[in-house]
Image 1: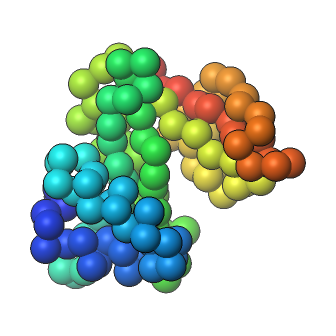
Image 2: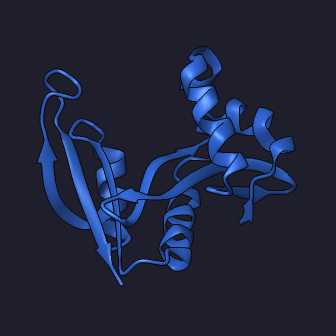
Length: 136
């Protein structure tokens, strides 16, 4: 794990298929890196995943985005990224969310000690956003 630097932007974008096609996502990633909020998982010198940790959710830690390169999935990278975010989080509660349809992320959150905390409707039609929390 290491903090992403501005020189890592292209590698971070290459991990995230949405960032490759949406300029707003690229801008979000660039600003997250610039603010020191983006942590990389590196394997053999290559970035294979990243997590963004912010403090924008009612003053609590919040992970708005975690992405693992498709070829590195199911190898514990996502777990290590979430555990790292929990380790460095400076608040007693760390929140994140995912779509109800994202069963892989929901399973990962359960495995690393996150518990359901609420539901937000009307963000994505027909696919509720499930909020999770992990307490220190």
